[in-house]
Length: 283
Image (cartoon, rainbow, N blue to C red):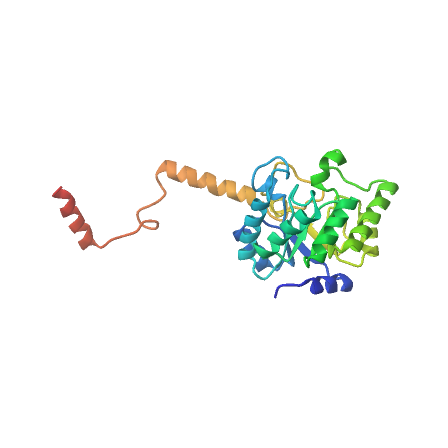
């Protein structure tokens, strides 16, 4: 049964850890749901791990909607969060609400996620929430703000910057966020935010004390090897298995051993074969 925000709140309150993975396609979503993941994030990380961009910035709303639709078809009974891409919510409250609504109306998402905590972003959270849409905040290492952060670097590594993150989390919660993703912060900071929050806090590289954990699925199964963040644990090596399979296929085709004429080839009866030969001989 698909979890609701009430279930996620209960899990957080009772200390039951929430499992959270990214996903961008139907087939992967199907396996994640079979495995029993609690939540799926259709993240703008798709830009790097599925579309081949160097950053998340080129990802469009249409890219995200199409991916969310595919994931929903693969995981009809899982809580899905759609990630609002760069410049889909920054311009105005009206733009933010309209694009957030597309995730719900067109793709069947259960919530949306957006990054940052400027006064304007807090206003976007409030506007989207007041439109009846569940909102996840995203603080710490926020890729859409990488230029201002000086790159993809851990955040909150000083007492002052850690305190600022705690203040931002409280502000985003007050604005109406239903949950917050905390990325790339020291464990002590993730713990402090979680202990002070009244909503689920999900972590990615934020230590073990958050209410749940997120990983980029392509990282944790060894599929994306351009670089590996410090906080990633590799649970499988799908990339290596894919390489072995592709390599074996190429070798067999070159050698003429695939397909063979017994196991991988369709047959017709001897009678029909004889008729075909007679027809061909008459041409």
